[in-house]
Length: 435
Image 1 (cartoon, one colour):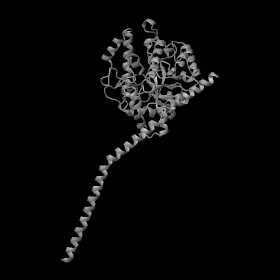
Image 2 (cartoon, rainbow, N blue to C red; image 1 turned 90 degrees about the horizontal axis):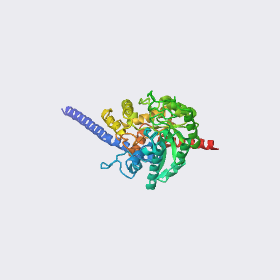
Image 3 (cartoon, rainbow, N blue to C red; image 1 turned 135 degrees about the horizontal axis):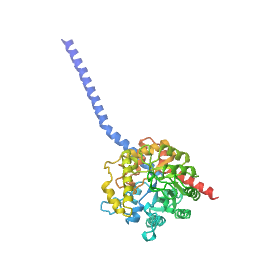
Image 4 (cartoon, helix red, strand yellow; image 1 turned 90 degrees about the vertical axis):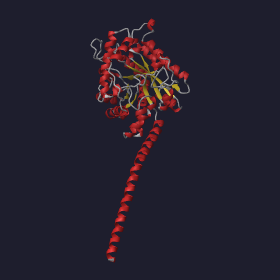
């Protein structure tokens, strides 16, 4: 009996030990599980801290911002808060948010709408006059805010101004009709600080076809660039003005690639393989830009990024064209009819789709040939992806590229170094041609 009791006691002792071990193991598992969210949060915080450091180190350049229209037309000033609920003018851009976004250089779009073609002095002046008015607005902002902004004219200027803690202010004309078919006007605009020109806007001009009206049989198209159009490109090469092929028809694009002695830019275009819109670039076009040594700056408008929205954007643009023909001298009526008839989508586009376009262009054209050209304030206030609602959100691009495994060096290329390389090369070609 004593032996049997001893055996039973021993068995009980073993079972107790097993139960105790199981409890300890269970406690450890629970403890590990409870720390996993903290670990994930820590990793995310570390990533964001690293991204913030890199974003500050990088030279961040946005090559297309249409804040100039609210500045000129609505009395907005960059010192105002464009996101103030009580403000009269709502924008994607102001000085406070430019600084929050870590912006180092901004190309203010000197946008000249097609409605300024053939306007008389009595009607406020034509395309060249409009160009001068917008240029003046940019200089006025720099004059009013010298502590934050400084004019820049070269790639080296951008580096110098950025190093001083200010934002470099540059300008690019959007719409080649701005020069009113005059190489003299082109040269004078360069002297006033214009450093790129988008050869067309949504309208075909007298020397280059646009992607915006290529399907309109009533437009007098040129099958790309005319002889004078090639002269424009040659002169831009000579004086050191970057040739911007955003908005041009595909044939115009290939004529420019054939004609230009310097790398070209697309100041605000995306990938057509991901979103089928003529404003975007095909893979063959992306490869051609890579071979040319140029750079494609990705547009942030969800109507050009999101595949479903791109189709709606095309339909709405066709509707607007029809209404403009129906009410040729009544832009307010056109706007009113658009608000009634156009298709709208409330669902927001995820930020990942914007990063998909950067990723695609980097893979097709090469990592040296992609950058950012936001189109802030040239698109609807709600027409941007989640996480890119305004210019303060630019650091999210750095974070997302890090998440996709891009190296620090390659992220810096996307944020600005690729563009600086192209701008420097355009300047070099100009020096050679002036010798």
